[in-house]
Amino acid sequence: MKKIDEKVEPHSSNFVDIVYEKPYSTILSILFVIWCGFQLYFSINTSLDAVKFRAYHIIFLLVFTFLLFPKQSVKNGIKNRFKISNVLIAFISVLSFGYFIAMYPKIVMSGGVLSKLDLVVAFICIVLVIYAGFRTSRNLTILVLLFLLYLYFGKFINGALGHSGFTLRRVLNHMVWGSQGIFGVGVGVSASYIYLFVVFGAFLKESGFSKLVNDVSLGLVGKTPGGPAKVAVLSSMLLGMINGSAIANVATTGTITIPMMKEAGYKKEYAAAVEAVASTGGQFCPPVMGAVGFIMAEYLGIPYSKVMIAAALPAFLYYFGIMVSVHMEAKRLGLKGVEDDEIPDMKKVLREQGHLSIPLFVLIILIIMKFSPIYAAVAAIFASIVSAGLKKETRMSLSQIKNAIIDGSMSAISVGISCVLIGLIIGTVSLTSLGLNFGNVILQISQNTNLLFTGVLVMIMSIILGMGVPGVAAYVIVAAVSAPVLIKSGAVPIAAHMFCLIYACLSNITPPVAMSSYIASGIAKSDETKTSIIAVKLGITGFLFPLFFLINPILLIGAVEGASAILTLRTLITASIGVFALACSMEGMFVDRCTKLERVLLLGIGLLAIDPGIVTDLIGIAILLSMAMVQKRRSLSFE
Image (cartoon, rainbow, N blue to C red; front, side, top):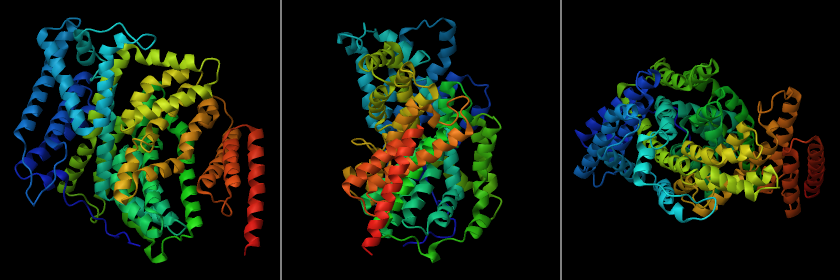
């Protein structure tokens, strides 16, 4: 097995320097630094109006999208130049959204009276956003076009999902000059949270934090059976909750972890699936939750600390289930852990690299002290530079700082464009009352049934809406449409939103549009369909557990006022036993290899134990203990 180099190696260059010749690379680098400076300054300085701040953010997103996407490559050693057509489109973007910034105060003061020029500019803005979407997020853009077509064709639909039709003037006014279109909550999320946390993740990566995570993970679980897979789970979890993008996390950590797992003896489909599942869960794993938790807190109007605490048990059980699965698979295949000489000295690792974790603690402490997440993220970015500078070996040069800015900003572009596109979806939903009407249809279908049936319908809808969409963006779409339905059906608000978040994220590993699985499959050179199916099996806890906490919110810590500590502890223990049984059922391995009947029994035990009822817990545990004794006796008889 390849041993990870003990020296912290910074990135030598970034995409811009590699692909574009000078002076084009220099111009792009300067623009990226300006964008980063703008975002950092106005994120904590509220002197700029929120709508104008979002408009400037969109200008930067569009300019970089048209100049850099689709991503270029170096052919025959010849670097790229700017295409005149791309520069022209970027210039039109600046003019169009610059016009919006200049005219917005006047139009607000006039009560929304629009001239023909205002409408023309609004139309151009929408076209530019859609065109940018086709360059960065084709699946989401197609979904957006379907929603926009609904604005016209909806008048031909009878029943609850139809509408009376809208004029082009009203649509343009609502989508651009109103507050619920492209300048609404979607781009607000991108401008305030996503950009800062993605850049923060890039600074951590450039400082060598990824190496620290890998070394610590190896030290903790490397020696155990299936050690490399467990290292992949831990490292992907820690890095995934910071960068907030399952796809980006697979693309970065997967290049290290997938070859490790394959070399250890795991099949290539299984190795790819482990990386995809582990990266996906980071988006709902506290304390950072990939920034999406902050958005949920704003939706619910509660402190982020409550969201973070509520997410703790689902995230723990999700990753506990994956760890059990990879352990049981290793036992089934007879795999061993990493050799002793490949395990890094933990004391040495912490002594030489431990200071690189300071920014993460700065972020968490500031959030606990009730500073705004935005302020905490900005402080953590600067802390990453300062902490890396505490030792000469990890000190970041100006070139590395520039690389972190560029890499982070590049990662934020596609997600940012997705958030702008989401504005068009949310605008359609609010203009047509589609969300309310669709919710009423689901309520009518599930009438005289229970919350569980409604939850299953919403689960399917959430997975479909989230397919091919970045995690944060997927949650915003799903929460706008699905959460109100669940709340009307009797769900606790925080349980409804957590339900939507988890399923929106899990769409990354759910066929047929399982983006995380496909990226991992490309790295592992495995079959995409098989990888996706295995990923669903590994993440089975994530698919089942939300249905339980939806009808029994006691499974979300803090969701039920007055819940005793003893009840919470019992819930944690029994749910963990249930997840253990589920993972064993999926892998076909417990004390010994399982028969088909035993796998079915383990599945039933898992469902019984996850349910917080005392009777179901006792029945599940009793059957599990009996099965353990039967398998132990059977294994001894074969020795």
